[in-house]
Amino acid sequence: MWISDNLHFTQTSVFEPLDLINQMADAVYIEQISNTTQLPRFRFDGDNRLDFLGGFPDIAAHFGFSRLLYDDAPYNRPDEDGPERNEWDKMNAVALAKLKHYVTPGVHAIVWKGEQLTAREYYDRLNDMFLAGDVRSRQTLEAAWNSCHRQAGESLINWWSRFDGILTELSLIGINKKDAEKKAKAMYLIREEYATLAELLGWKEDVTYMEFQRAMLKRDRDMRQYGVARDQCLADATSIRRNVQQQQDERSEGSFAVTTRQAF
Image 1 (tube, rainbow, N blue to C red):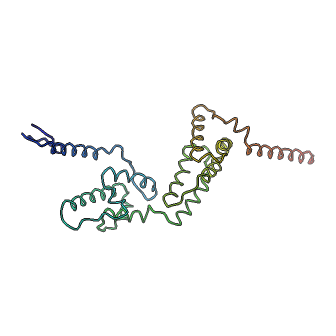
Image 2: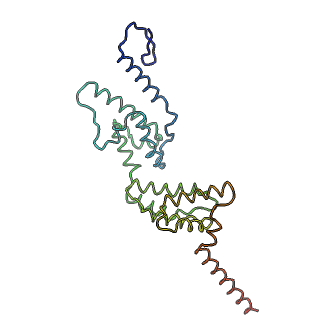
Image 3: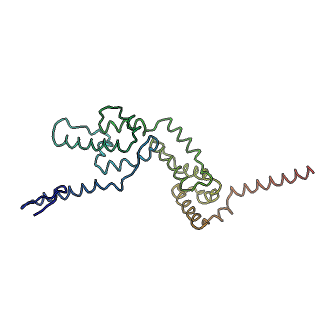
């Protein structure tokens, strides 16, 4: 009888059911770790923190070394020789290889410095140098968020990606904005093109930031696909902001007409 042993076929006349189960489990594991098509693809260059912070935990979980990097209590190498130490050595080697693969050569040179580092030591140094936030990071991110205006011609999806990206960075260093503040900031920074619609959909206090965002993105999709957004006419007609602006424009035009007549 032929059975599979780590993808090599050997002949045997007798086999135990447990051995076959173990062989099948090994084959499934090999297939799982070999299939990397769904894993994130990036190289950390010192700037794309969110790519690394969001993607590398998936890589660690896929290859089975999460506890080596992310457990609060360090998973140190066992002192005594034996299967546990061998398992630790294999896990550490895989983790180091993946850490080096997912950073650029420049970042690797700064972190490594030619020293004999474990995977945990390598990750902790990478985190301290590039990933963790500090007071200056908070000040920079706060300034970036306050000035994150949607640019002329920028799609709503791209703008909101920038807007939420800064919020994510703030959250990673322990700064979590209140829901009402996020909604109010988005309504202010979204620009005139969407201002009246944002006012209509977001002015109620019981509308959450996520609900406001979802409603705006749906209207934006309508605008891109059909050239008109649902509720836009109602928003224009009931907008306090637009009515005030129109009154100011009318007063300006009236003042200009009076000034022109006086001039003549």
